[in-house]
Amino acid sequence: MKTASKKVINGWAMYDWANSVYNLVITTTFFPIYFLAVTKEHVSFLGMNFVNSALYNYTMAAAYLVVAFSSPILSSIADTRGNKKNFLRFFTILGSLSCSALFLFNGDRLMLGVVCFMLSTIGYCGGLVFYNSYLPEIAAPEDRDRISARGFSMGYIGSVLLQLIGFGLVVLGPKLGMDESLPVRLTFLLVGVWWFGFALITFARLPDSAGTMTKHTGGALTEGFTELRKVYAQVKQLPVLKRFLRGFFFYSMGVQTVMMAATIFGSKVLHLEASMLIVTVVIIQVVAIAGAWSMARLSTRFGNLRVVIAVILLWIGICIAGYKMQTAMHFYLLATAVGLVMGGIQSLSRSTYAKLMPETQDTTSFFSYYDVTEKISIVIGMFSFAYIDDLTEDMRNSVLALVVFFVIGLGFIISALRKQNEAV
Image (cartoon, rainbow, N blue to C red; front, top):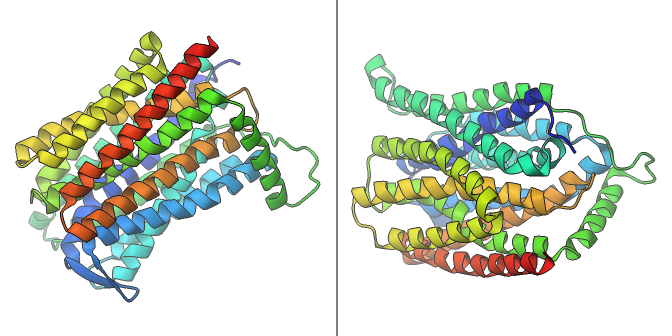
């Protein structure tokens, strides 16, 4: 196959530009800091008592669990009916509107904040499987590392721009007569508008997908299950892909949890100022751009799986250092290291999976396996992190526990590399 036109590629990458602001500005920076600031350390929710940071992590885990269960069926329906763009549009609208509604959240409206945060997270991660599944459709195998890195780089650049706008509001807001919370809540609103507005470019440029079934003999749900069983049977016959997915499952528990909990750790354990945390996250995103491109270049020289193994080893070192760190300088240095490997592992994982997939029209269903693997791993990772934090009331123990996930993932990736070498 040939790589699609530059217009289509840029339109696809623009969705990273559009929705990545949610992952950075909401889940990584402004919202966790704001959530901890407007809630008490111990809160009551649905008749149960939680540490506020644990409730935040449980909410995110619940959102990812919903997507993990719904994604395989929806993606199979998208393949059979050829309507993946409609699903992408639906999750974008759900996420962006819910994110904008966080503008109304304050300490007295805990239910509103938790529900809107959960729905916006469902919108964010629910749309990714349909977005990612376009990669093997628009990019030739030899271009997938580069184009995947382009998407993540666009996401990081867009996120940094909106992060700086939000930071400017926080700094200048009080001087303009705004109350303390208004600049942050305006940032939540801006994220929703940015996400939906730039996604319109993606919807206009991405091609419509053809359904894998021209004659429908059953309902959408029935055909969806049929498609799912067909893809599952194929995955079982692909030993390298199967082992890669298992490894991806375990190391994603660590990667995603570190990314999502880093700001809370810096705020609650090291007591860093919000302004310094925001600047640090901006630095992480800038470094991540270099990480995504450098890993793509290294993969062409050494092979994807070898580079993934090296990056996992770096992540293990980061977790051990995170458990031991004591000062703000330690946090800033470690955050820079996280940025370097964060962009690389995400971009490389997506393109590696796209390379290991067989030639197929069932791209959405195949990517649902990738997506569900990641979502369930995030649920387990975030739940484990929150549970250990809630149980011991020491987040350092949660960070150290992530090493186990990385080690198991490393073993599976090494096994996948051996299988790949045997097949050559």
